[in-house]
Image (cartoon, rainbow, N blue to C red; front, top):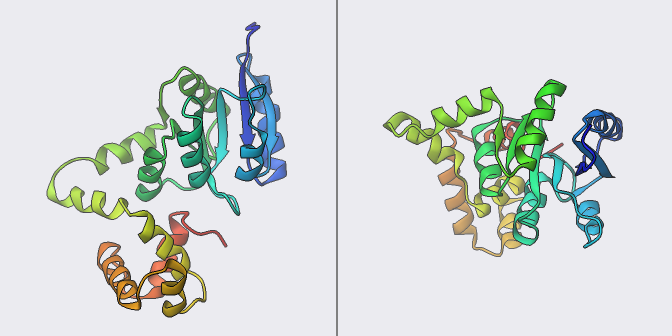
Length: 219
């Protein structure tokens, strides 16, 4: 049995799932959970020189500081920590955003425990782990023919476009969204029209449905 275990922090806002994952990971000979946390904010506040995991098993969809924001912060402040994401979403936009945020692995929440162990071993060694299904999506996404380039263009959204999508999924008026983003109403019209074309939708409801399906907003 391995004596020097790899330290893991686990972040998920669903208590039952989080505690089940803690128990599961602690059955793996190579790993030890040193922190079980409810949010990205709790994770940020938990890190110190004496308490720092080698791997963070991170839920993507959490209120407040979600998995994307947490991963971006970690990549900037603690790039030495390896991140493995657990989520219900595996859309193209989610994959691209995770890669941009420096995430080393991506697993669906219905994955088999053996695959979770394999993924933890891969990312803890500084490698990458994506499930076979996810790898297939990425391979298709980055094929450079004309049709698939359209999918790449759809998947790569700017931070402003993502923030606009979040706000467009609320009951705020476009004027209020412009004020919150500190841009002109004309610029808001530009974001809206660009996303209508880019995402193949025709209405604000279509934007909201896209944002929900791709994990950009949570209800």
